[in-house]
Length: 277
Image 1: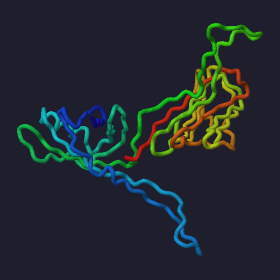
Image 2: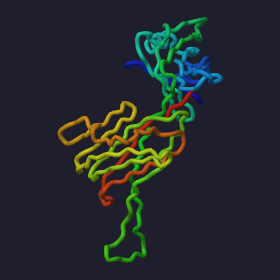
Image 3: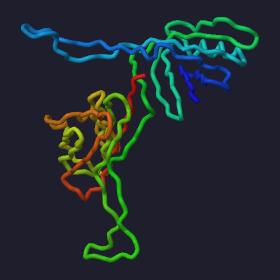
Image 4: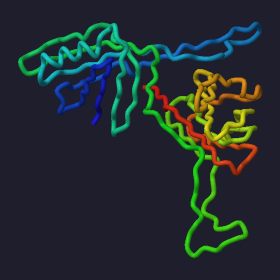
């Protein structure tokens, strides 16, 4: 069953297809996303040269009906769809949540009503027409066990496990996405994080102690160094030939290397999948 959750400030409304006090009847307009194509004209070239394209803001309507506690739910609808407030609309289907930020174009319109129900309609404007998943966190560093019975010793002792420094990060959305990379020491420079799927590399020339972290925000093109006592801008630790790559749609094999492979630092990547409605 599909559900819609709307949240604005401290007010929240949950509606479903049935068995709810507020039932949504449709979302006309959500399939009408358009893009603006940018091109160049050049002498002696037929047609135009494609440069880029951008998705235009999304406008759609939410139609529904109130079946119980009509007066209270009318007041709640007016609060969550206040045209002066930004809100978040979350579309839930099969326990999968996708959210989009919105502004109500106008106050809700309340149409035909009886003692049993009240119809309503809301016009919604989304400046960024992208649905986002919940935050996904993936550990690039992991361990695999080697210890088992019967076991044998070597000159180096009993092998307990091995440390892996690569993983597949899945982007199941419709668009390439940015992410936040957290690199925890100890790690010895040079540190390289590579997307083997696209052959793009982030190179860092800063060694990290056990109490230090580097946080890379690819969306805002920002790098910070966290210590026990301070937070510092650290973009200067990025090698000039680095590329703050995005996660491509599909599988991305992310691998990291350091000057000392025996160190037990950690690397994690956090992101949200992006969908076109």
